[in-house]
Image 1 (cartoon, one colour):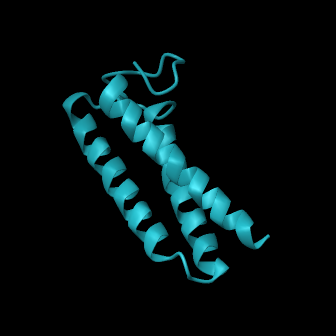
Image 2 (cartoon, one colour):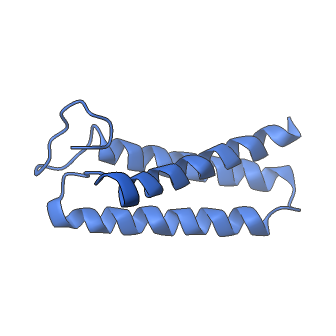
Length: 101
């Protein structure tokens, strides 16, 4: 159980890296705000960098550290995914495609 939270945290971190990479290098991930999508990209990158730094600095921390870190970033990543799919803005309504318009 001690390694469980570390693996879940690593999985969320890898998922964030994949989402940021796909949005940057493959296709535009639409949040439905038009040019305002840049705000959501900035939020994604800040969260990714913050998560990466906290994970690297917390290697020797107790397991409670990773539990809290995992819960916080799971909630924030879920919110970002929902904003990119079901909760899109008015410029690009959700058409059933995951992330892309």
